Length: 342
Picture 1 (cartoon, one colour):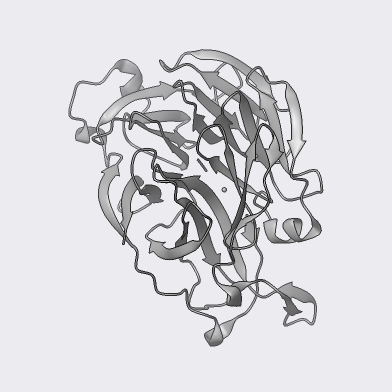
Picture 2 (tube, helix red, strand yellow; picture 1 turned 180 degrees about the vertical axis):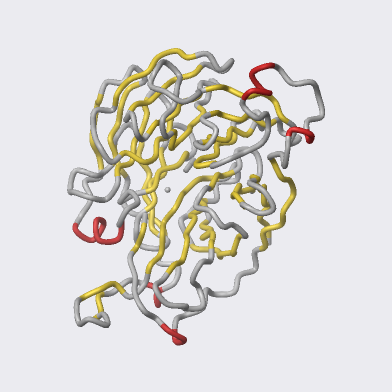
């Protein structure tokens, strides 16, 4: 997921900024999802599909691939969920529509498809989570009764919500599937909050079995959570020279020297862990604007990185192969599937 999710903060590096290390991995485009216009439809559309633009995408904020290969795109622009078949064709449109009624959206922010095909959507403005069944029918909605939630993951019998890094209470909040808050885990440290910025202190994604993956602000570090119990930290610092440190800014005030957004985490079927980062900056260091994957094997050892072509912070991990999904805005909004290999 994804969605799916943390800003490590930054400053002026100038021409001496470190380059991302070369890697034996490549990311090759294999498919695109999304229409340029309604004329791209390959079959007759239902009234609902015509009304809500079919496979035309607007502002896709989250992506999740189900175990059957269907791709679920959460479109905040058109207030809908677009479901694509494994071959890239339009499967159906699940209509939210604008509003606060059952199944309606104000600012849908995160989507997660569970193991039985139920679809869970978090709406950021109404601060609630809605469950749709596999047919797209609203089952129930519950309020999360807290501010700052950005990402959710449905895993096992729980819904995990990651909150923006704005206070010591902004860790991972656990709900059961009826909306009862059952636990809070991973209270962020001062460093977690410092590295989080406007994103969550931790990113969340699906691991193997019922385990949740939790990405950390430090580049290349994550944990797992099973039965609400977090593991020890795993992974290793991918780029030691990119560890943020406090320096004096142009006005003499302290600032962080590097900005790296930890935007997502997930696991491939072969057990590799995938961490997604966006490099940014106030100046023009060599890495500014790059979107990078950090790859780790089952043991937690860093095995490489690869740059991916994207101009948005929307990201998904393949459920059936070593793929990732990113969004590109030109020539019109589309989701791009990338196969990652050595």
